[in-house]
Length: 93
Image (cartoon, rainbow, N blue to C red; front, side, top):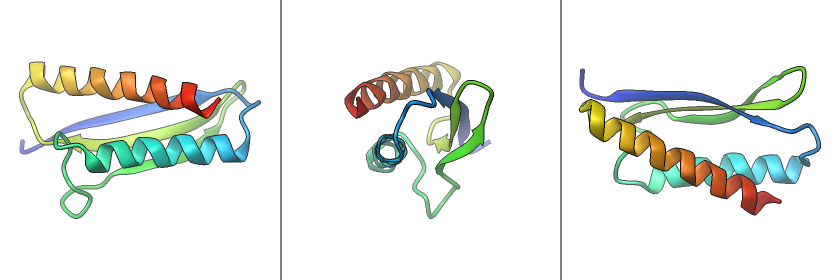
């Protein structure tokens, strides 16, 4: 194994506007691309896209790979991504 994957579905309320959804997707992708902890897009896939309309949410797929394969380090990187996503969603209003 050379990388470790993160694959999440982030559920956003239907009340979110298209502008808010674009801001959230773009900001998450920008964070991943600019972080030293993630594999560059030219080496591994990275997607942050609207994926599904669920019963009570619009789902955003976050799919990326970390540079580390160490479990503990991966957990910390994943946790920091969760904090960033929470901040980004709050910033979107």
